[in-house]
Length: 301
Image (cartoon, rainbow, N blue to C red; front, side, top):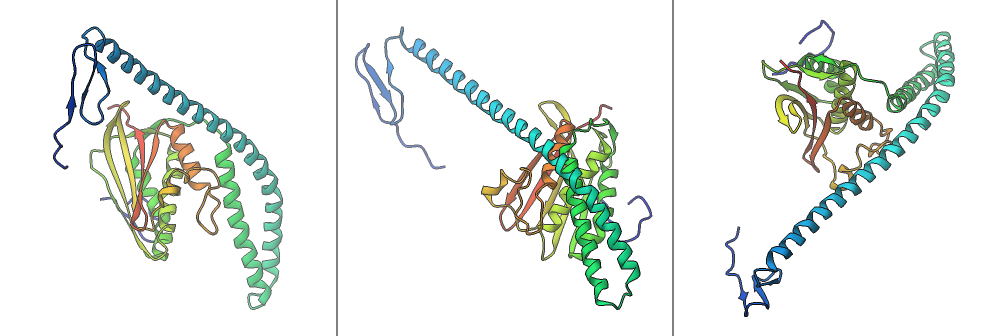
């Protein structure tokens, strides 16, 4: 573990087929093979034509499905853009008066003795202001479209940095944090700030999913996808898991199942990773745990 911060340190280390039924007649009539077979004219002149028609229809169906998916994604991006603009305005309008309230509360706290009952009330006000400031910060992170600064990034170093920062938080909640990474892991092409933000959001989300304690394991590994070499960072927890009906919703802005959550952490995470041409995958079993896998491009040697 790099650095000299206080607090805990975390280091990476069939059934057999039934006999098909059949029916055949003379040439030029319909023939069948199997219960679910498609009728075909037995005349050799017709079968190739029908097969070609089926193939073309299949291609058309696939193209239509891809078109529908593209239209849905485009509409989603448009909605996110509008939501981002609104979020920026709301965050700006909240941040300024919030700063004034915080400054006033701190002055009052300094003037009131620690044994005065009002002292604890003002401390609660300041704690709530910090929570609101964090929500406003998440709103601004979601709203802004900062162009990433792409460079070579040592993912092992970034993971260690994040796990150091959350170590005390995890210890308070009886969560054991560990990590595994190969020695010869190549660098990633990414923005260090966006990477740390994404890793921290996913880690905190995992810890909060284990209110009774548990284990968070971070695994780094090389891999390949259709675009070439990639790197995978998997965050696996032993928490409550995500119900099947919510898996598709967890990246939607403001969707949350937490009593005090704003529903922006994972939305900000996916936006940051997609800005780096990466992806975020999730696998979860309700009651057993969840794995979030962040996939990034690997830098060339």
